[in-house]
Length: 361
Figure 1 (tube, rainbow, N blue to C red):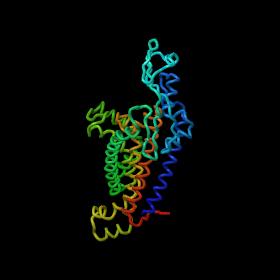
Figure 2: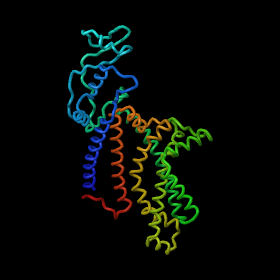
Figure 3: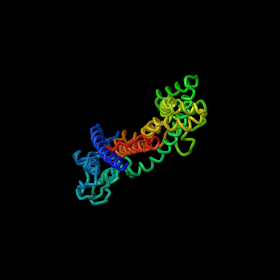
Figure 4: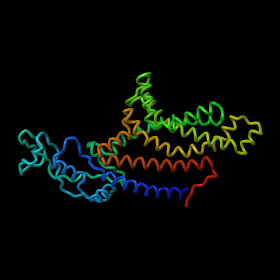
């Protein structure tokens, strides 16, 4: 197992480096930047901001700075802090400006600071994801630290819905195979797979906001706020779990040892609990790793629809705002979650079925 985990750790490092590299250069290739907006900044202000965050460096140098812990910084970058009213004020500033002094040029107010060192962009190798370009008072670590518990809470509720509904439907469908109950549960599972979570969320909002106003459809702060987004997020995964549980149980129930247990006179319930579930739910266990990661990453739209301040909402905002560091930070977070959960599933697999050996080569 130690060799298995060591190799997984090595491949994790290679995978993370590949994700960071591809994401970094793809984001820089998109038109626009973090300081673009409806109101055009003065060129001098834009130049100072670009210098402040190293956006005036060549891409390869920005990339190495982002990876860290290399010291690629320059010294002596002037920082323009405040400009109001007339944007031509910069061109009329007196040459003998003093550090920290505020100048009035006509109706304009301009405040300058002296020489400042550049703001470091962190270093992925050191765990520092750098400052946010849009939320100037927060680092990416701060934003993720505040929003991740909300997404985890929502994901836990969604996973609880998915497991409860999926296992009950899958086991019931397998036990009553060929009956109307089996047909109804399979139709429900097919509908759950076919409908995206945002479509289910739309139906829930119409139902519980207009027809039966029983639950809040926006905001965060109480368990009642988790019900609708948790169900909308977990319903498609419940459908997959139901299909996998049904298929796995039907395969196990056809084995020789199950027929032997029936021949001994054991009840169907005892056969199910003692002999069938452990092997029949292996496909469900293997699905839980990517499903858990999918629930967390799939919360992007759900969090926006229900007004939940989770990591998914910040990820969407970072893409719209061209907030490079925040977008990269959330991408790295999701990569770590997917890889870690898949590794955990492989370990749990061996506990459920000792015949399965971890591949070390």
